[in-house]
Length: 498
Image 1: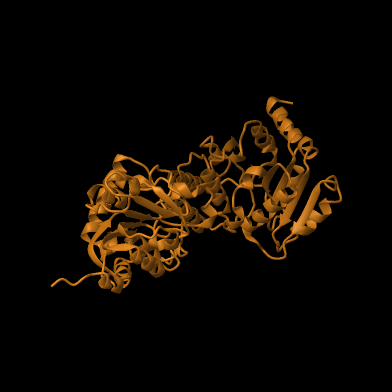
Image 2: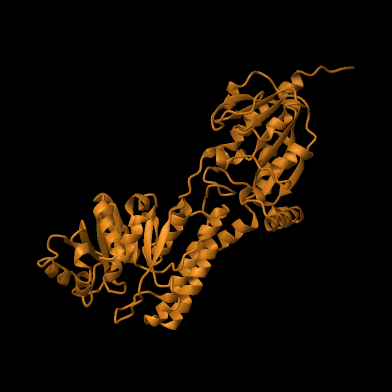
């Protein structure tokens, strides 16, 4: 036994391993596939289970006959009552393996396209600390052609893999091999049940593993093309794989949302830290606004209190109201749910400055929040409020394409309960008893959302200047400065002087 076989045997002895075979109209090949599994591997397996995806031929009958020979102890055969699709079959099979509490599951195809003789390569690789092992036909680039892969498929595979690698930041040799295996403890972290039920299911799994930082090791396998029937529409498959990668790419920048790619861990603090870009709303308020020097109230600016902490020295007092208490010394924190009557928790005083930066859109009823806010302002007070512009051109394009998806950050943040255009936000402020005295528009703070680079700085400047030229279309965020209109209580407190 060579070193690789010894490593494979060690994996079998250290882990509970099962082989899962997907089958559809595979009566001509399925028996050969099973017999090609090396005996010394079969003897160490916990189970070989085949899920026949409602074949229209005799695949299920052939499998049932096999249960009476040497596979009787280890082979389990199931048939779905309706066709689930290639991805749907895998979803069912992986849930089965997880329920059985296996450690590793290896996927084989019932049509024999992937050689069971390569199982030692797959198993041996688990002696390294990896989460999945894939067989690849492109580690040696020309080997796939020598194995009979048509030239158009070779080029299609290479081009499609390169595009997918670029979009997700991966380094895979091949995205499109169906010879795969997974540690089930790692696979369980993926919402694979949300994946496509078609052939692009395999691409979705890779995107999820990449987002989670899980490791995929590729091992060299031979290419085999025989008389098996391919049920994949190549153009449709390529389009769906690219579309999935583009969605994944846009999710990184919070321009799109799909729950199957929502696998990256994050906490509330990381989601709502203040922005530091020189072209951002927060930077503008801190560095370019001449605000009154009285008492300041910051709504929703808890945690790092990035904006309000800058007014500690120049203002009389700084109070922050949020679910999360501020961590900055000398900023008075009031813990409250802004969706509830929060002003009752405040001392009985009026404020000369109220900041409501990127908070109004999180309220179930912004009008009630604005009423409480108005009642807490002095007659000479200033309100500084910002929100996202839902009429931003990217959102318009998404709507034109029939897409409207909430996400973790950005205009369509999952926690946003009300969405505004420039006009609707201005109207709500005015109807709440304020007079708008200034409006500023801002582009996408790319260097805060994505990271700093020369290219992103240039794009951020372009976005900023476009927002000033055509706010309704290109403003990503809008900032209003307003003053309260005098109310009856203030009127009665004034003395008429002759």
